[in-house]
Image 1: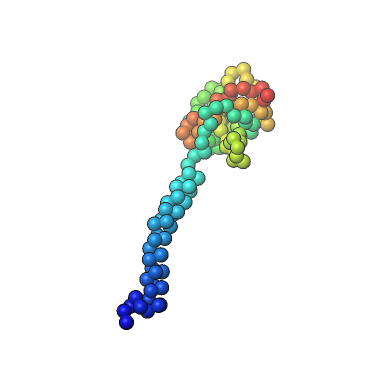
Image 2: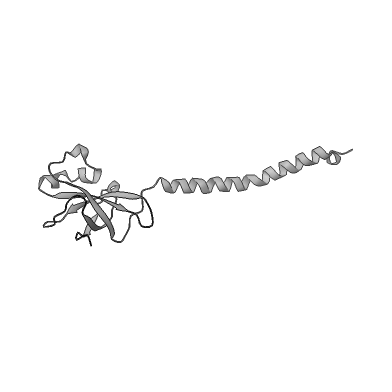
Length: 138
């Protein structure tokens, strides 16, 4: 009697063949999962169009550098010269995620906490400041 005539032997061979065919599919799923998780580890995408945000607080010369975000800590000299900056939070379009950005307040513009405005976001992690487009809150 040959090994292929034994019912248990045939099933074992069939099972190992099926497992070996599943390995490439499993490897593909693992690669897709890794790629998806890598997207979670990157910076939030920055909008290249104005978005609505809300002023969280104003930072000026009275703020201590140890409490500042990197993009503001590099501008301490400007703060000491009287420049003011706004901490602004905005919601990503079609999402529940929010981001915090920092913007220089232009001369002659008055902002206060909880004020709605329109900004062009930027990444503080890249030493970029957001730009205030419209501060009327409409």
